[in-house]
Length: 127
Image 1 (cartoon, one colour):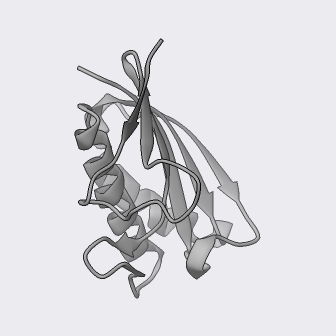
Image 2: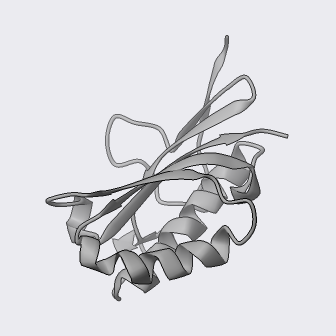
Image 3: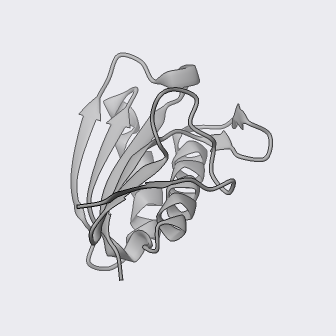
């Protein structure tokens, strides 16, 4: 199957040897997003709720560039700097995935890029 590299200026540019997403057939594999404002190129200020909102906005832009959307996501992985912030992250997450949410794993990590509080990656279908 052909691999298509996905890139959009509506989400932060990849800052290393990775792609924002890769589309293979009817699947999109989106790289983890942190709360970088794509216009400013910097991590936004704010708590985990504000960062989760920016992360999901960025993720949405990447998925749309691939011909998909948040409502076509089948699996996410959430990386949290502090599991005590799960409730606040989850409240914002529920706004973006209000019905038929995807499967999800949530993992506490020692650190995230740029000192971010949350990172989310996703797998979605196209169409």
